[in-house]
Amino acid sequence: MTTLLIRIAGPLQSWGDSSRFTVRGTRREPTKSGIVGLLAAALGRPRDASVDDLACLKMAVRTDQPGTLLEDFQTAENDSGTKMPLTRRLYLADAAFTVALEGDREFLETIKDALNAPVFPLYLGRRSCPPTTPLVIGMSDLGVKEALEPPNLPWQASDWFKKRQLRVGYRADLVFDADAENDADPAYIVETVRDVPVSFDRTYRKYAWRRVARTSVVMLEATKPVHDPISALEG
Image (cartoon, rainbow, N blue to C red):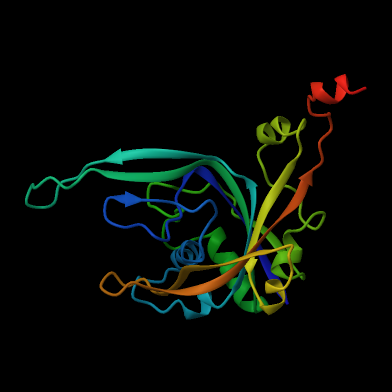
């Protein structure tokens, strides 16, 4: 097995999987459709091209820096000049994630080269959200979940965020493609999400379901005790 590790970070990100009408939401971590779209853009694939080979890659996401939710209101006009309804769009500000993709080594090497020299501009969910670079961290011989567990991969958060967490420590959310073994393990929360792209064609966008397991890993132990006056009174 071979796993490609990518750092996903930028001033703004938005990973919608259930946006409807005037509300465009975001998940708290990158969706598979968003990552597949980013890879397809790097490889130079048009919207009507097949993405089956990209969608088949196993994926895991670690939240190194959760960011904060930012809400934006937008208006627009169509070609006739008619004003469109006011829309609410949600973004993640100052977030950072590590994405692990598992598949054939030769194919992953091709993706890695494309991310370093993309054909089309890359964005994090929406065109207004360019990524910081470089994206590629490297390759690993571990599976997607194991590759993201410490100490296999260092914490990818910004320095200012690491300093802010020194007192309380930090546990990173870890989401990965689930299998039957995860259902019986109480350490995981298993859910179903609809974010597997079948087609990005503007006239026939379609997404399939997948099961994901959610857990957390300790990236930083607390170095200072949390203020607890009650325990001091108890002696």
